[in-house]
Image (cartoon, rainbow, N blue to C red; front, side, top):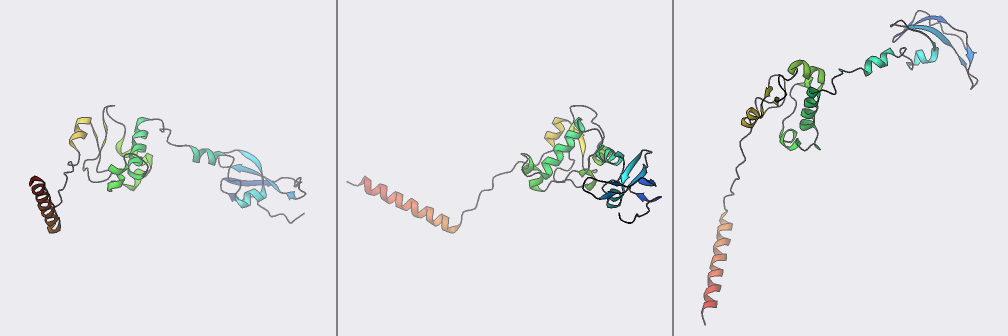
Length: 194
């Protein structure tokens, strides 16, 4: 049996060691040194000293529960609006990516990558017929570039239609076209002669 390290009074994440418990032999033949510990939430449990020192045991389970608790809004419409915005801007596999992230529209406010910050800025929609719109259509989403807009307001806030640019003909193209016309004209005149 090894030398016992006194852990009484020491703090390990959320555990505070209260007292040693009788050493026990575990099935593999080694000794375990359990300690009576109290979590900051008040729960008392017996915890192995090796688990305390290695960080394998950090609390009675309350830490894990706190870490897994979210904003409890993942089933709401506003959460779906935020998730759709992120997908359009950040996911190249999204069907709307070409019109958003593909042309440089991103999420300009770094806090908006987290739902809680996004929600703190935009809040809930006033009406169900409103959707998230960017005020400046060529800038990304952010706390200074958004509004809740109706469909007709959004339809007016779009980039101008792309006009097809006609390529100016090069001199070589014009010469090739003229040569093709003269060949066609000479071929048709030869066919017309008996």
